[in-house]
Length: 115
Length: 113
Image (cartoon, rainbow over all chains, first blue to last red; front, side):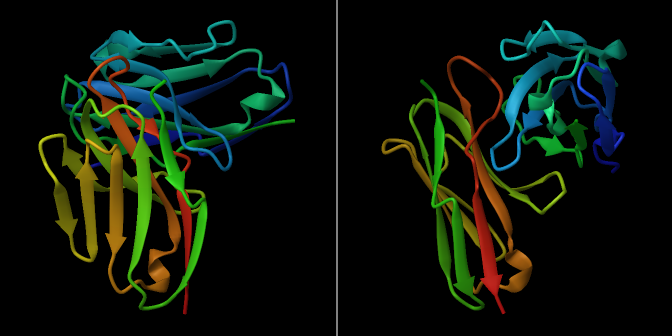
């Protein structure tokens, strides 16, 4: 079974530029999450989708971050304009259980460096 | 506020030692608790999932326990090996409020050969 796929793995941009990350979850998984992990910290939830609807985006900085989940499958996370403090690893995860009580599977992450 | 705490932040042990990693959470009303491993530059690998009705789970040399009443979980690693060196994260899904994993900051483990 293929895992959660993310791209790109690494991205370096200047502040005020834009960037987009892509995630393909495990086939059949209804719930998709984007987490932000700053160096030395645990991951922090940015947004949670169930199928193609948003369940929780309360911690997403909506003035600069946006995310969508196309047809309840793939998802993209965009940052525009980027700030220095956005330097982090962006992790995508998916779970089978629509009640979000099941096991989560994570991708390898996309590491963003903002200069 | 619903929080997850892991102490210590870092731990170094000699190979072969049995060790315990600690996780505490502020709200005992949880759906489940998960332990993850993270290698440098990599994503998270799920190790053990404990449902709220369970007291422990075992996988190989790993044993995780859950005590909801005291808001604690421990991850026991038997006969540690250098290959166990990684950051270990625990995470909780709360029964109320946000229905997604809330993570601790992790314990960075170094097993010395």
